[in-house]
Length: 194
Image 1 (tube, rainbow, N blue to C red):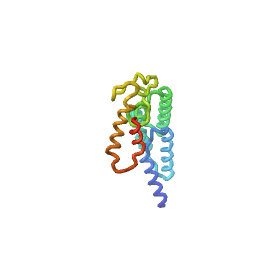
Image 2: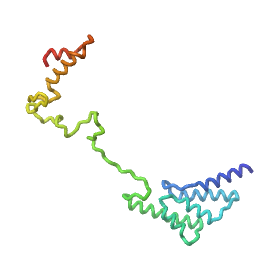
Image 3: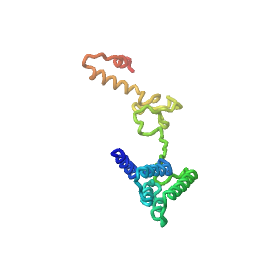
Image 4: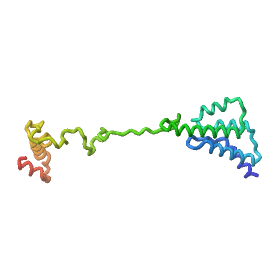
């Protein structure tokens, strides 16, 4: 007896809390609700058909809100069988419209818009990405035509400027290595003169 009472409570709870979802076919979910109602009837718990129809209408998914409103405000009293045929017709019409208008998403349906991002995006700062509009990467420039911005001499650019190397080496060997450490290749390039 206690097991029977417990199963009745769970069945009522299942029916009361059941919610239809947009991601699954509505007719299949309607049949699940009918199965729960059939189990309630097996346990001698009969629900008035008008109440069952009204509760099922409330469980219709949110994207069907216009159809749900039409069912609620209809003048005729529907049976469970009539409600099922109405839902089946509406679902088949929605599927046909969906096939015709695949480019148009339904209201309330989640869509994803893919955006192609430019590879020269500023988010790649500091990463090893070659930029198309960078003048120093153009191989067709003649090295004789290049002018250094630092020393104003032709034949090289600022990053290859020997004046820059000599100043850096003098600064590093003069004050930075006074601790007696190994000065390594920095001293050898400075003694060569460049």
